[in-house]
Length: 144
Figure 1 (cartoon, rainbow, N blue to C red):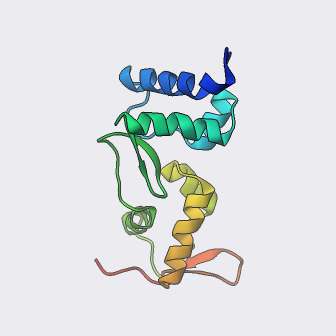
Figure 2 (cartoon, rainbow, N blue to C red):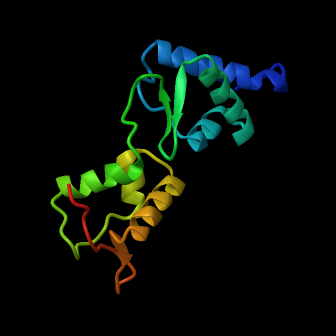
């Protein structure tokens, strides 16, 4: 991305994202910060400033552990709830293999860090544990 002024780069990025949202090219979840860094060829702090500018204008909102969304759109449930729902929908039983981190990242469009945090929460609740074959297994499913 050509830049006339390094200090104004985040403003160019926020305007680019704003236009993509207005034109419907981004309609719900924004790309991950890592993807935005690659797309615009800038560092995390520049992307962070661009996203904060859009948030201040009420264009986007952040969801803890899930990323950035166009304001008023998207599934705001914690990732743990989404994963539990996935397990139920897929008919997973106690003792079955738990999806890999990569599968969960791709399925939910979130970072590996977000997936690892959700898995840690599930392990803490006794829902998932490491099996003998170095692969996580479902140990329990919450009632509901």
